[in-house]
Length: 271
Image (cartoon, rainbow, N blue to C red):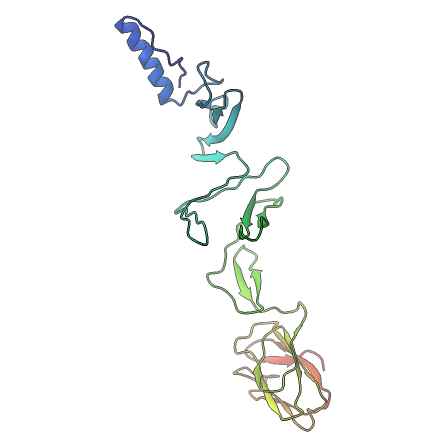
């Protein structure tokens, strides 16, 4: 590690060689030292070795030193210090700009008063608003692993407690009531249905894929279940432990079915 004055004097060969070697050594060690090189001019980059195991790369603008990054010799990492980075003109198409980093972990470091934040800007033709993901103050490292594929409509994102995220049907979090049904349909877990059998009886088929806690609710919209029955199609699952569809013939009936397991299947939540 060395610094030099970058001046080659008019001198004899031995002194010239020493002067040249000093300059080359300064270049070769990135102007390393515990203070800015005396030869620094606007644009000089130098390595501040005040911290011997994690030196700081600095840029001299002619007045001040701007810290660019710390070099962690122990972890073999470069930790960039600027809190915001703007990248434009990379893989630009008519609709987007894409930066691809292969086999690389990207770290966005926080500051003294806030956590790291990633911002996704809206279409520039629309405005300058953004959607951001920002770290809180976790007691330990947290990694979230995204699902391998999209879920289906109205599903929610859940965790297994170890950071693995997946899509699942909503359960136990309230019922999403749908518009009045007047003909056969297939129910979705987490939804409720007003069924109008005034014109004719029809079948509401339960979901083919069901998990513990899934719920489906049904209400007699017009008070006609007694004349035109509503049939609940089991769709391969038991209902109340029985491998048969459920026929509802009670006027003004309203009920919710909850899925338990492959043995019992769907059961009435309230009796």
